[in-house]
Image 1 (spheres, rainbow, N blue to C red):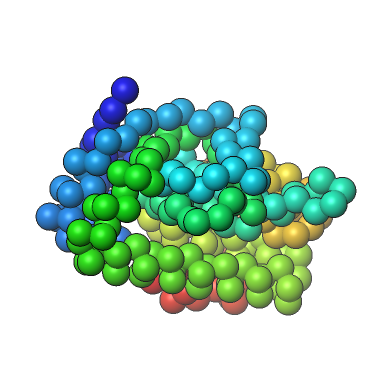
Image 2: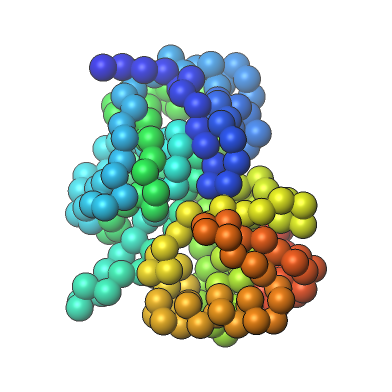
Amino acid sequence: MTNTMTKRSRGAAGGDVPLGEALLKAGLEPHLAAVLEEMPSKSVEVDPRRPFREAGSDRNEVFFVESGILAKYKADGTGRRQIISLRFAGDGILPGDTAADYGIQAIVRSRVLVVQQRDFDPVVDANPELARFFWKLTQRHASIGYEWLLNCGRRDSTARVVHLLCELAERSGVDPAQHRLTNPFTQQQIADITGQTSVNVNRVFADLERQGLIRREGRDILFDDWDEIRRVASFSAAYLQ
Protein backbone atom coordinates (compact mmCIF):
# COMPACT_ATOMS: atom_id res chain seq x y z
CA MET A 1 0.00 0.00 0.00
CA THR A 2 1.44 3.39 -0.93
CA ASN A 3 0.62 6.77 0.53
CA THR A 4 1.84 10.32 0.16
CA MET A 5 3.12 12.60 2.89
CA THR A 6 -0.29 14.11 3.52
CA LYS A 7 -0.96 12.23 6.75
CA ARG A 8 -1.52 14.35 9.83
CA SER A 9 0.95 14.37 12.69
CA ARG A 10 0.65 15.05 16.40
CA GLY A 11 3.34 16.55 18.58
CA ALA A 12 3.97 15.32 22.10
CA ALA A 13 1.78 18.04 23.53
CA GLY A 14 -0.08 19.62 20.61
CA GLY A 15 -2.85 19.10 18.09
CA ASP A 16 -2.75 17.62 14.62
CA VAL A 17 -0.31 19.15 12.14
CA PRO A 18 0.10 17.93 8.55
CA LEU A 19 3.51 16.39 8.01
CA GLY A 20 4.05 18.59 4.97
CA GLU A 21 3.37 21.64 7.11
CA ALA A 22 5.94 20.45 9.66
CA LEU A 23 8.53 20.16 6.88
CA LEU A 24 7.69 23.65 5.66
CA LYS A 25 8.14 24.96 9.19
CA ALA A 26 11.57 23.30 9.24
CA GLY A 27 12.50 25.40 6.19
CA LEU A 28 11.59 23.24 3.20
CA GLU A 29 10.31 25.15 0.16
CA PRO A 30 6.73 24.27 -0.90
CA HIS A 31 7.74 22.97 -4.33
CA LEU A 32 10.27 20.63 -2.69
CA ALA A 33 7.66 19.38 -0.24
CA ALA A 34 5.51 18.54 -3.26
CA VAL A 35 8.41 16.59 -4.76
CA LEU A 36 8.76 14.53 -1.58
CA GLU A 37 5.04 13.86 -1.51
CA GLU A 38 5.29 12.08 -4.85
CA MET A 39 7.64 9.40 -3.54
CA PRO A 40 6.18 5.91 -3.01
CA SER A 41 5.75 5.33 0.72
CA LYS A 42 3.83 3.38 3.31
CA SER A 43 2.47 4.50 6.66
CA VAL A 44 3.23 2.16 9.56
CA GLU A 45 1.90 2.15 13.11
CA VAL A 46 4.71 1.60 15.62
CA ASP A 47 4.05 -0.05 18.97
CA PRO A 48 6.21 1.34 21.81
CA ARG A 49 6.43 -2.05 23.52
CA ARG A 50 8.86 -3.56 21.01
CA PRO A 51 11.73 -2.28 18.83
CA PHE A 52 10.77 -0.85 15.44
CA ARG A 53 14.24 -1.56 14.02
CA GLU A 54 17.00 -3.51 15.76
CA ALA A 55 20.64 -2.48 15.90
CA GLY A 56 22.43 -4.04 12.95
CA SER A 57 19.53 -3.50 10.54
CA ASP A 58 20.26 -2.28 7.03
CA ARG A 59 19.86 1.48 6.72
CA ASN A 60 18.10 1.32 3.36
CA GLU A 61 14.93 3.13 4.44
CA VAL A 62 13.95 6.69 5.27
CA PHE A 63 11.62 7.28 8.22
CA PHE A 64 9.46 10.39 8.58
CA VAL A 65 7.60 10.64 11.90
CA GLU A 66 3.94 11.40 11.20
CA SER A 67 2.77 11.29 14.82
CA GLY A 68 4.26 10.38 18.17
CA ILE A 69 7.96 10.21 18.98
CA LEU A 70 10.70 7.80 17.88
CA ALA A 71 13.88 7.19 19.87
CA LYS A 72 17.28 5.95 18.79
CA TYR A 73 18.93 3.85 21.48
CA LYS A 74 22.08 1.87 22.19
CA ALA A 75 22.70 -0.82 24.81
CA ASP A 76 25.83 -1.65 26.78
CA GLY A 77 27.24 -5.14 27.33
CA THR A 78 24.80 -5.82 30.17
CA GLY A 79 21.75 -4.75 28.16
CA ARG A 80 21.28 -1.40 29.88
CA ARG A 81 19.85 1.09 27.43
CA GLN A 82 20.73 4.69 26.67
CA ILE A 83 18.35 6.73 24.51
CA ILE A 84 20.65 8.80 22.31
CA SER A 85 18.20 10.92 20.30
CA LEU A 86 14.53 11.65 19.69
CA ARG A 87 12.56 12.30 16.52
CA PHE A 88 9.32 14.25 16.86
CA ALA A 89 6.51 14.64 14.31
CA GLY A 90 8.00 16.11 11.14
CA ASP A 91 11.50 14.78 11.92
CA GLY A 92 13.18 12.04 9.93
CA ILE A 93 15.85 9.35 10.10
CA LEU A 94 17.93 9.18 6.94
CA PRO A 95 19.49 6.12 5.29
CA GLY A 96 23.17 5.19 5.29
CA ASP A 97 25.71 2.93 3.62
CA THR A 98 26.42 0.77 6.67
CA ALA A 99 24.27 -1.22 9.08
CA ALA A 100 22.74 0.81 11.90
CA ASP A 101 24.70 0.80 15.15
CA TYR A 102 21.54 1.83 17.03
CA GLY A 103 18.02 0.52 17.48
CA ILE A 104 14.81 2.48 16.93
CA GLN A 105 11.78 2.29 19.18
CA ALA A 106 8.68 4.43 19.69
CA ILE A 107 8.29 6.40 22.93
CA VAL A 108 4.50 6.37 22.49
CA ARG A 109 2.32 4.75 19.86
CA SER A 110 3.45 6.45 16.68
CA ARG A 111 2.90 6.52 12.94
CA VAL A 112 5.91 6.51 10.66
CA LEU A 113 6.09 7.07 6.93
CA VAL A 114 8.59 4.63 5.41
CA VAL A 115 10.32 5.42 2.09
CA GLN A 116 12.79 3.07 0.42
CA GLN A 117 16.28 4.47 -0.15
CA ARG A 118 16.10 3.45 -3.81
CA ASP A 119 13.16 5.86 -4.23
CA PHE A 120 14.62 8.58 -2.00
CA ASP A 121 18.15 8.90 -3.36
CA PRO A 122 17.24 9.77 -7.01
CA VAL A 123 14.89 12.52 -5.80
CA VAL A 124 17.59 14.09 -3.62
CA ASP A 125 20.21 13.72 -6.37
CA ALA A 126 17.92 15.55 -8.80
CA ASN A 127 17.20 18.36 -6.32
CA PRO A 128 20.34 19.80 -4.66
CA GLU A 129 18.15 22.06 -2.54
CA LEU A 130 16.73 18.95 -0.87
CA ALA A 131 20.24 17.74 -0.11
CA ARG A 132 21.01 21.08 1.56
CA PHE A 133 17.75 20.91 3.52
CA PHE A 134 18.52 17.44 4.88
CA TRP A 135 22.10 18.46 5.63
CA LYS A 136 20.75 21.35 7.70
CA LEU A 137 18.49 18.97 9.62
CA THR A 138 21.44 16.62 10.18
CA GLN A 139 23.44 19.52 11.64
CA ARG A 140 20.51 20.40 13.92
CA HIS A 141 20.36 16.88 15.29
CA ALA A 142 24.12 16.94 15.80
CA SER A 143 23.74 20.14 17.87
CA ILE A 144 21.04 18.44 19.95
CA GLY A 145 23.39 15.49 20.45
CA TYR A 146 26.15 17.80 21.73
CA GLU A 147 23.72 19.35 24.21
CA TRP A 148 22.63 15.91 25.42
CA LEU A 149 26.28 14.94 25.91
CA LEU A 150 26.77 18.02 28.08
CA ASN A 151 23.54 17.30 29.92
CA CYS A 152 24.53 13.74 30.87
CA GLY A 153 28.18 14.56 31.44
CA ARG A 154 28.14 17.74 33.52
CA ARG A 155 24.70 18.62 34.86
CA ASP A 156 23.32 17.21 38.10
CA SER A 157 20.29 14.93 38.30
CA THR A 158 17.77 17.76 38.67
CA ALA A 159 19.19 19.86 35.86
CA ARG A 160 19.25 16.85 33.51
CA VAL A 161 15.56 16.15 33.96
CA VAL A 162 14.50 19.79 33.86
CA HIS A 163 16.56 20.42 30.73
CA LEU A 164 14.78 17.52 29.03
CA LEU A 165 11.40 19.03 29.98
CA CYS A 166 12.48 22.39 28.54
CA GLU A 167 13.54 20.74 25.29
CA LEU A 168 10.31 18.74 25.17
CA ALA A 169 8.27 21.94 25.46
CA GLU A 170 10.30 23.68 22.76
CA ARG A 171 10.19 20.80 20.29
CA SER A 172 6.49 20.23 20.94
CA GLY A 173 5.63 23.87 20.26
CA VAL A 174 4.13 24.37 23.72
CA ASP A 175 4.46 27.62 25.69
CA PRO A 176 4.79 26.22 29.21
CA ALA A 177 4.41 29.67 30.75
CA GLN A 178 0.84 29.64 29.43
CA HIS A 179 -0.11 25.99 28.89
CA ARG A 180 0.40 22.62 30.52
CA LEU A 181 2.87 20.19 28.97
CA THR A 182 1.90 16.58 28.33
CA ASN A 183 4.75 14.31 29.38
CA PRO A 184 5.01 11.41 26.90
CA PHE A 185 7.81 9.64 28.79
CA THR A 186 7.78 6.98 31.46
CA GLN A 187 10.18 7.53 34.34
CA GLN A 188 12.36 4.74 32.96
CA GLN A 189 12.51 6.46 29.56
CA ILE A 190 13.56 9.72 31.22
CA ALA A 191 16.23 7.73 33.08
CA ASP A 192 17.39 6.18 29.78
CA ILE A 193 17.68 9.66 28.24
CA THR A 194 19.38 11.39 31.16
CA GLY A 195 21.76 8.60 32.17
CA GLN A 196 20.44 7.84 35.65
CA THR A 197 18.03 5.49 37.41
CA SER A 198 14.24 5.71 37.49
CA VAL A 199 14.53 6.05 41.29
CA ASN A 200 16.57 9.23 40.82
CA VAL A 201 14.06 10.54 38.30
CA ASN A 202 11.20 9.95 40.74
CA ARG A 203 13.11 11.82 43.43
CA VAL A 204 13.76 14.76 41.09
CA PHE A 205 10.07 15.14 40.25
CA ALA A 206 9.14 14.96 43.93
CA ASP A 207 11.73 17.64 44.77
CA LEU A 208 10.48 19.92 41.98
CA GLU A 209 6.94 19.64 43.35
CA ARG A 210 8.09 20.32 46.92
CA GLN A 211 9.89 23.44 45.70
CA GLY A 212 6.72 24.67 44.02
CA LEU A 213 8.27 24.68 40.54
CA ILE A 214 5.89 22.18 38.95
CA ARG A 215 2.56 20.48 39.54
CA ARG A 216 1.57 17.14 38.04
CA GLU A 217 -1.95 16.19 37.02
CA GLY A 218 -1.81 12.74 35.50
CA ARG A 219 0.64 13.00 32.60
CA ASP A 220 0.31 16.78 32.44
CA ILE A 221 2.97 19.02 33.96
CA LEU A 222 2.17 22.60 34.96
CA PHE A 223 5.10 24.98 35.43
CA ASP A 224 4.52 27.49 38.20
CA ASP A 225 7.82 29.33 37.64
CA TRP A 226 9.01 28.84 34.07
CA ASP A 227 11.85 31.35 34.37
CA GLU A 228 13.25 29.51 37.38
CA ILE A 229 12.87 26.17 35.57
CA ARG A 230 14.96 27.52 32.68
CA ARG A 231 17.56 28.84 35.13
CA VAL A 232 17.85 25.49 36.93
CA ALA A 233 18.31 23.74 33.59
CA SER A 234 20.69 26.36 32.16
CA PHE A 235 18.42 26.09 29.13
CA SER A 236 18.83 28.10 25.96
CA ALA A 237 16.89 27.02 22.86
CA ALA A 238 19.60 28.23 20.45
CA TYR A 239 20.84 24.66 19.81
CA LEU A 240 17.40 23.70 18.52
CA GLN A 241 17.36 26.30 15.74
